[in-house]
Length: 585
Image 1 (cartoon, rainbow, N blue to C red):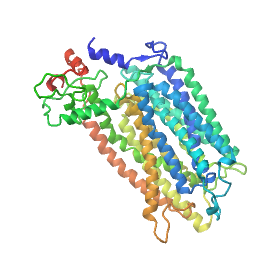
Image 2: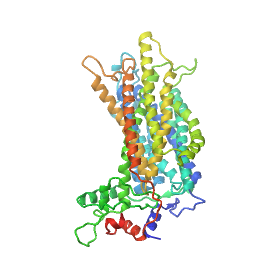
Image 3: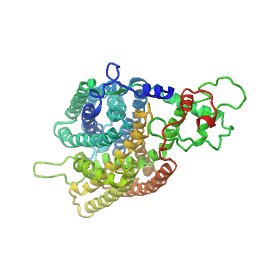
Image 4: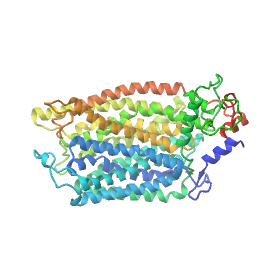
C-alpha cells in the first residue's frame, strides 16, 4: 500500500465510541442514522417552537417595537446559523461530531430552561401592557437586568443550536460511505429522510407546541421545548454504541492559511503549461481546474537550493484541493442568501400579518398566527416521500444520477419558485390592507396560506439540495465545516433581512411620513411594497445563480476514467516532498 493510501485510509477510518475500528455489520448504516434523526426531530421541534413564535413574545411581553422585535428575531436566528461554523470547526478539528453534539446539546437545554424561568417570573419581565393600545408609548421596554437575563437565555439557545445543527447532518451522513455506489444511493435517501424528520419536528412545533404557548403561556411553552430537547439528547446518547465516528483531523484553517501564504510567496513563479493532472484524490474526485494560481503552492522553489522547504512554503496537492473546493462553492453559497432572507419574513412579518386577520376557525378555536408556518410542512410530509419513491427513480432513468437530479439543479428550482412566494405575499398583503382601510373588514387568516405553501415547495428543493451539494463536495476532515456553510447561508439571510428593514425604513421615511415598516400597525405600514422589493431581488438572484452554477459545472471536469497514477507520484505529493510541478501535476 502506498503512503497516500495508508495515510488517507487512517485519516478517513471510522471508529466506535471506544476509539476502536468499526465493524461493518455492527456500526453505521440506517440503524445508526435513525438515532441521529431522532435528536434532529426533537431539536428542531424545540427550537422551532421558540423561534417561530418569538416575535409574539418579544413584542407583547418584552415590549420592544414591531420593527425592533423583528430584528431581534432575525438576529437571533442569524446567530444560530452563523455559530454553525464554530460547531463545524470544533467537530472536524478537535472534538468529533458526537462530542460536539453532546456538549452543545446541554448548552441549548440550559438556554431553554432559563427562558422558561424568565417567562414565568414577573420580576424578570416588564409590567403587563398592551402594545396595540393608543397608549403604547407608556409601555415599558425591557431594560437592564430583565433584558440581560432574556438575551443571555436566548443566546445560550443560539450557541447550542448553532453548534449542533451541522453536526447532526454530517454525523448522520457519516454513517454511510459516499465512495460506495450502494451506500451512495442510501446517502441521498438519508438526506431526504433527514429533511422529512425536520418537517415532522417543525410541524409538531408549529401546531402542538405553539398551541401550548398560546393556551398555557410562554413559560410552559419554553418548558416544553426544554423537555423535547432533553428527549432528543437521550435518543442521541442511546445510539452511541452503533455510531461510526470520524476522527478529528486537526484545524482546517491552518492548512488553508499555509496554501494561501505559499501561493502568494511563489506568485512570480511560472506554473508549467502541462499542469493538468488526471489524478484522483482517492475519492473519485478529479483535479479542480479552477484557481490555478493556488497550484504554485505545490511547486518546489526555483532558487536552485536543495534545502527542505517548510510547510508554509510547500504544500500538498490535498491541501490545495481543500482550498479550491471552499473557494469554488462560495458563489453557490452566496446565491442562497436571498432565499433565506425571504424565509425570515415568514417567521416575522407574516406572523404579524396573520395577527391582523380573522383567526377564527370555529366559535371555540382560533388559529395561532405562528401556526400558519405549519402549512408548508404538512404539504412536505406528503411530498418528500413521493419525491423519494416516485420522482427520484423516474428521473434516475433519464439522468443516470443517483439523486435523480443534481444538487445544483435542485437548488435552482427552489430559487426560482421562492420568488413566487413573495409575489403571492405582496398581492395578498395589499388586498388585506385595502379591505381593512376601505371597508373596515378583516380577511380570513387562510388568505396568506399560498405564500407559505409556495415557500415550502421551494425549500424542499433548495434546502436539501444545498446540504447534499456541500456534503458531497467535501474531502476528509471537511464534512461538518462545509455542512456548516449551508447553515451560514441562513445566518446571512436573516442578517440581511435586519439590514433591509433598517435601510428601507431610513430610505422611505421623510420629515412628514414614516418609513414603510416604521409603525407598530401593519395597516399603516406598506409591507406589500417591501414584499415586492424582495420578489425583485429574488428574481435577480436567480439569474445570477444560473451564471454561477454554469461556471461551476463547466469548469469542473468529469472524473477521469483512470483513477490510478504512478505510485511514486502519489507518495510524493502526500508527504510534501520537494518535487517539480511536472512530476505531481
